[in-house]
Length: 481
Image (tube, rainbow, N blue to C red; front, side):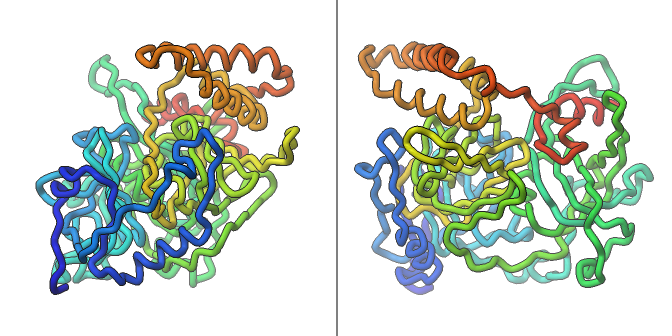
């Protein structure tokens, strides 16, 4: 990499502008990503976060560059509203990041970023989109031992894995879905004080066979048993962005304990991570070729791949391809900053609702607690990152009580009220609250009672394989028992 400039995170943050760079100005990875994204050049309607009039390509550096650093798990030291982003650090500064072609052994290893996008952000200094990269030290332990595929959730306690007889259970199968991270108040078991314990739930279609094998798929095993694993505690919850990238792939977990929970007469067996838990990713399939828009529907739920054309109301309403809208109106936390206008995203476990409005038929993609969104190509445009504090308001609670068609209509009404700017600019907070209340009042006067839906309870929906929502009650039981 002769005549290549080494940039630091501090250089990017201090410059404070949205740029894109590569180790070679003719980098095949960067060119491929740009050509895929710009061939469709997504459009957005007026009122979107990034309109056609303001959108422009990221400023390319006119010289080859690389960035050296380490990809790390989320940490509370990085002040990010999304809370559970990957971190990138060069030893001096740390910023949020996302990475294509993710490999487990990249966590904690020094890498060389060959092509990248950087976007400034107020809360953490910036956000790095890693497009193409390679390991720096081929002689490191993880790089030398390619056969190692065991990653302790709490590395410092890995040596005690065999010390606890209760954590002897293993789960091996296909990871179907993952919930957001939620913080649940619970008793610490020693005193009467309540502590806030973060965690998330994963749904795995496991094999009845109790023997873990790297070649399980090739041995004709049938992954037909529905199993739920709760990642419990701060250290385990920090693996959320890693596990998110495994949805739809094969994983194995060992060092788990088992909990049988009874709720309203129904029993549910849940596995819980411990200080001895280890994550095994035994079958890491190669990333396939990304095609244009793909819809995979199973009943009224399935997956969707498409370009983001516009973001509204801090990302609660996402305009996808023509006549397709994604609703993120439930508290879907931990969304990647890379969900930007122009990015190609893949949405799993989303509800499909075909609805006719006066202006035509619309396909609504309704996200729920088990929906996961991964970014497959970063946007080549200088568009805003999605940052949502997920603050619950009276309007958001009202919207969550509606059916998906009514939600879309209500949010479009809210966008229409954005055009009323008669109040002074220094009254922005008051003006926003008034628009929320005005939207709610208008919607209540127009929406019939049939458009309201009862909130699906999480435990019952788990038992019948529906949405995972409102997990607090069962999580408290899992932790307390």
